[in-house]
Amino acid sequence: MKGNPLKDIENAIGSCTSLVELEKMRVSLFGKKGYFAAQFEELKKLDGEAKKEFAQNLNINKENFLELLNQKKSALESVMIEEQMRKSSVDVTLFNQESAAGALHPVMDTMDKIIEYFVSMNFSIEEGPLVEDDFHNFEALNLPKYHPARDMQDTFYFKDSMLLRTHTSPVQIRTMLKQSAPIRMICPGAVFRRDFDITHTPMFHQVEGLVVDKTGKVSFANLKFILEDFFKIYVWRCESTFPPKLFPFTEPSAEADISCIFCHGEGCRVCSHTGWLEVLGCGVVDPNVFKAVGYKDVSGYAFGLGVERFAMLLHQIPDLRSLFEGDLRLLEQFR
Ligand code: PHE
Image 1 (spheres, helix red, strand yellow):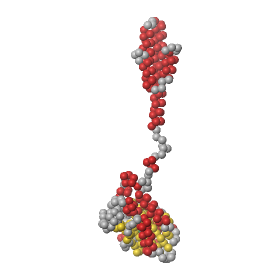
Image 2: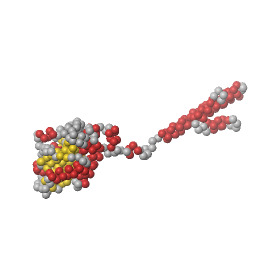
Image 3: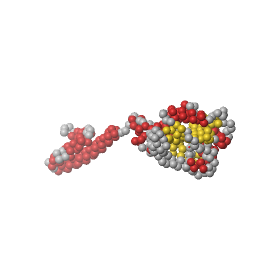
Image 4: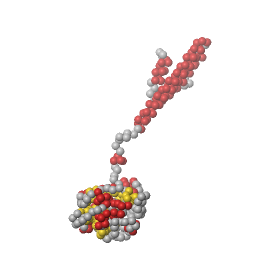
């Protein structure tokens, strides 16, 4: 090293660009054959005052260079960490193909299609609360307290006679109290019952329908026409039948059954070996319901259909409960 050797060493340390280079530098200074080893050999050759002075300088230089090496080491290390972080950082603005491939849940997809049909037939969409009172869910629907038909719908109760609505029919009452006839509405929404087996879950969805008219001409025939048309368009090639049933809020009342699409009418576990699947309840609005909402000289029909039933049928899902398990192996098939 010529010129000012100390300055040269300082510069050499400063210009190291990696930890490997710096380590080489350290060895060339402090190693057995390094700069300081050579300097100590020089020291041996001196005597007296000169030796003392040389030794003092040597120790100061040693300290300085150790300090310089350490500083440079931490500097290089933090540059390296920053570099690593920059390389492995996640760009949150990047387009994610996984999330773009999401899909509607089959129940919501089914619901949308049902709504689409009825909206195309000029029905409006109404809403009501999930937590209902006894009046709207039962009383006004011709289901007075202690009426045995209340047992048909195992109810989740809160305090103060509040409950989780067991069907979307209370929205019939809310709509009629809010506006006057004519009414032509549907109400899609969640309903709750204490039920759990392969065709029942404690929460499921219904689409309620209500048509009320002042002409007095709305009849069961109109109801049957629209439902048969809906089945034809929506569940292609199925057969339907309307066996009588009892609902306190309609008279006459019927259920609508469509031919089981699992066994095509042969009889299987899903249709309880009947060949038919009940998909909705319907009927001509009972006069007591009109009385409860103060309607006079009107006639109407109503229906309430089970959305999950249709989802099961259309997608051939044999166990209703699987729709609510959130299992991606099932849900990914609906992309
Ligand atoms: N609310 C009835 C049920 O949940 C269905 C229904 C609606 C029946 C309207 C008749 C008229 O079972």
